[in-house]
Amino acid sequence: MGKLFYVLVISIIALAGLTFAYMNSQAVEIRYLSFDGEIPLSILLLITLIFGVLIGMTGNAVSLLKSRRNLTRMKRELKNYKIS
Image (spheres, rainbow, N blue to C red):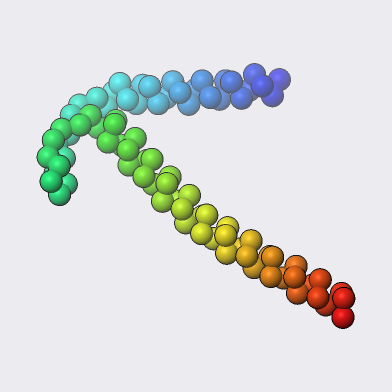
């Protein structure tokens, strides 16, 4: 039952993505630094989404590393406290 639900949800998301890409295929003009050209709107939005996810993951990774370092330090302090 769970696997069927998972496949159904993924299929609905994929179908929504495909219809969105099909309905937003018009080209938009982009000028950024030395790049000047046209790209389909759906591709531009996908690139923007990917950059946003990467930025979010980077921020999350920095926070996670700080938390792990803090946890390691606290475990070391606790171990020293138990020994004393």
